[in-house]
Image 1: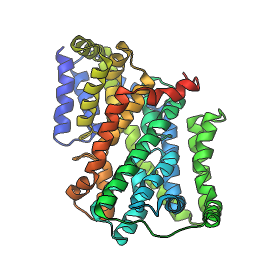
Image 2: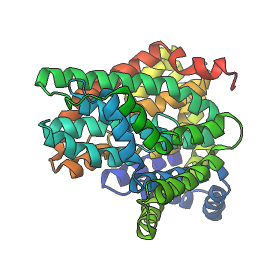
Image 3: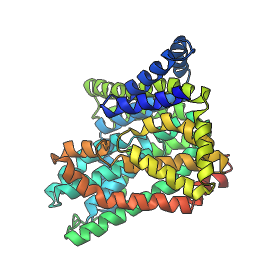
Image 4: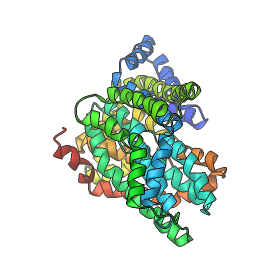
Length: 428
């Protein structure tokens, strides 16, 4: 029992003093191992196991593909088409931002990557058109959260690996809530714009012009079809689809948009190395941390404790949701998954909660975490793009945070929103 307490005290203390999550996980595990009879060689064994986690390669591929698509002009082409669809509506540029994020999210699976790609284009455009900087920054940061919900999703990939759940089923389950969240965020952007008097771009397009734009930008718009179509048709696994995404982005960027050159490809490689290196380090040390939790049956003990309090699945989901919202203020999305998935899975299974539903619910909850200080990764990216202080960006995102929290409660009460599509397709 002393070691069980020691590992949590060590982890909380290291996080409290600002230690990076991978260092906190690794050091707390080592501290406990030093006081136990378990040999330290276990660390190297578990780190080598991460190298055998083949599905993790998909994270590397999708992040690299996203960087290539951004630098190759595919994000800008998506914005052009989205502007023609909803740009004339009052507050249309805010809606264009969210719609563009939905398209881009279906290609890269990263929340921060989505807000960086769309925000760099849309924030200056909105400010130039008379939108307030808070509105522009808030809607861009919020639209970027769709990057982790609409497939392919990097957090869903990691959850699927840890929970031993079908990744294809998770991706399929993310479609309906992804479009539901996108529609609610676009409605919120419209309501705020109407109250603030923001107008659309006041430019009309004929059907011939729209079709011409579709034809001109067709290669960018077909990217989600190529990537996701390969997965759902059974032609390729998520890992193979990520490689297809990289080659597709290279082909479009070099031969179609002609905006990719060697220096930009190298820059995209550096960005992907930094992003995915962080992810893989966290997953590696969390494997050691998870091994200790499993050996001392800490997840089972917590499950028994929570089940003693209540066996109502709705109450348990509300409790877990509140905990995730709180931890999301201090921990990165993938870190919460790798640390807490082994803890929560026995609990949700004991009360009959579907692990596929729980994975999408977790990701939806962490959309809020991307917008809540002091961590709030999307807020910081949007802050840098808009040159605003964090407080003003957070103020601009606040209405959307309220909407996302309401949607979290909605899916708890109506879980079929998430599960009906994969069950309809008999994916599990």
